[in-house]
Figure 1 (cartoon, one colour):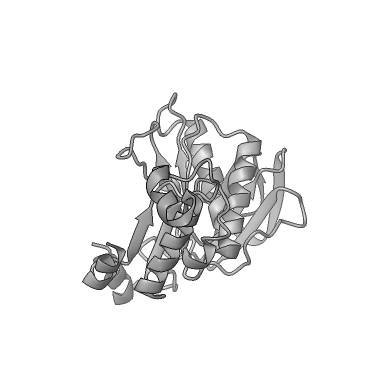
Figure 2 (cartoon, rainbow, N blue to C red):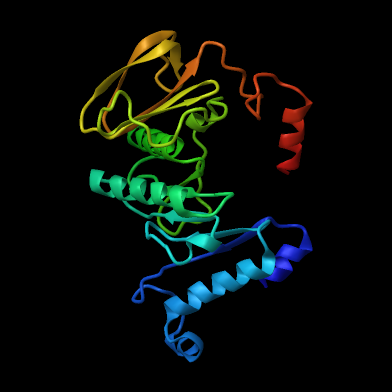
Amino acid sequence: MAVAVAECGIFDGIFMDLWSERAEAAPGPDGIAHLYHGNRVEALVSLVKRIREAVGDDFLIIVNTRTEKIPRSAPYVNGAFIETWDAAYPRERILEIEKALSWYEANLRYPQVNCLDIAKSPSEPWDSPANRQLVRAFTTLGLTHSNGYILINGKPQDYGGHFWYPFFDAPLGRPIGAKGETYKNRDGLFIREFTNGWAVYNRSGKVQVIELPQEVSSWSSGVKDKRRHTLADLDGEIYLKAEAPPAADVNGDGVVNIQDLVIVANAF
């Protein structure tokens, strides 16, 4: 099946659900896997290895790992889908997700397509202050720790209930800074520069005040043209430089032209 998908020329890759290298969690019936490999983990690793050998390098393989490390599958996999269905995200859970994302960024094969799948609070409206803060925190976690993606889900198992937040529309541009860097060595306060601004993610345990090299505007709070900004704990923000291009600058090169139109057209 994977070879047929690769050869048809329509798709860029495949996604495989419920991926685990723990014997007690690996999916599939024991009987079939044991006939060929002795256990289900061996079957999964052999499967993804043989798929990679058959489809070559120019084909994406993404697996749903939740937050589990997959060292044996990593040489063959381009991305992890970090699926979560939490009703709430305490600090320990956020740290678990953050560490998992950093591991995938460091260990999976290029090109990488890692994705955070985060559930909004099911007890509140999608645009409540708590859900907007959740989105800011996890979006900036992803921006400061990866070159990946984020998906916001509705209630558990509501696969069609995905939400687009205005925070996603910030014309941040392309990353310039390294992943996982802290602001002035403050534990739990992360910052990453982009062509049009900075993403900042705070899980330090307290409110933080940051000062950026130039006047910037906060994308969500509405604070304009200031160097010093205050950021709550378990929150995140995007700070745009004064000369940030309009949102129509899809490729983040500083101008709006036919190249942006081509990118938009190819997305349909």
